[in-house]
Length: 389
Image 1 (tube, helix red, strand yellow):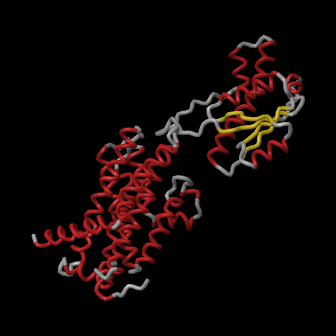
Image 2: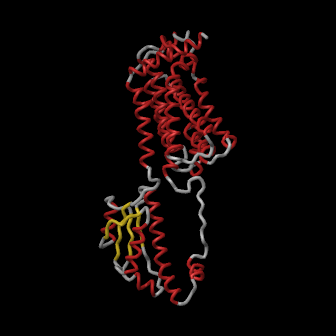
Image 3: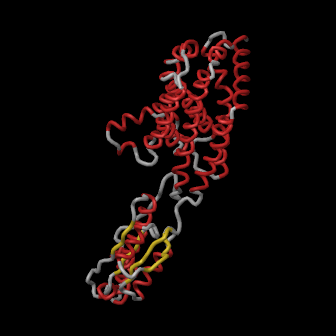
């Protein structure tokens, strides 16, 4: 019972520290809530819509104008300007006035009717991968529809039936079924990894900051003294209030995205609870481990910030890990966010049992246990180290 009382007293001490230090308020409540609202509202529409597109129509016939109207009718594209030349349209792309443009040369309609295979060109800016790929798809579709429309009219004039026309124009019909996210909603793809990644960033930094401040203000000996120099009890008591706050925030986030925004979650509520526990304890374990490696406020926070920022690239949500070089694939196993993302993808998003993601689950447990390798070094630092700015 004495150990529980010690943990409770240390936890109360930590609550007082958090109340009197605005950094804790901003990093545990203010900024995380701002991040949740920002990312989920940023991609609220699911896909970018009405992205500006230009047209260079030197043919200026009913056929070319029909193609332009069809392009403007797509959800992602909006024709905002007509340009007299390719050079003018290219300049508009370079000045970020439009993301892409369609070039219809003079004589296109005549060549189509004479079956001379005219060339319709389209140019798009791939500096932004999402906008470039979506507009490329629209422009490619328009180019295909242009030749198909003329071919359909010609074959109909020759007396072909609709079935014969479609067999010639589209010999293979594609029946597309997108598993898990049939709406192609980028909010569903990206928010479940970006928001937890930023949350892990705050947990990393605040964990290292909490330990580093004990050295900075020379209160480490007093902190350990409250636990009779039992470093395990001291750490449990110190991070108990933070753990409660982090779990409350993450549960609120999961309720918001999976209940209110209705993100797909085939794994059930139990898996979401387990995922939240893994996220918080693994991030705190890594933060304590980083401080144990470098018992310095500045160095430990630098390690945590570097590891958290690299996690977004190594998680595999924006660029698949299997497409990276072998060395980077091996390095990806050292990031908690990578394992969190894999457990989410396998067990929550796709609804497979935890056994299918057992290696990533064990890896998250491993991050929780990392402090055991440096716990004696942390105790030694609190008792003997002198803070050096």
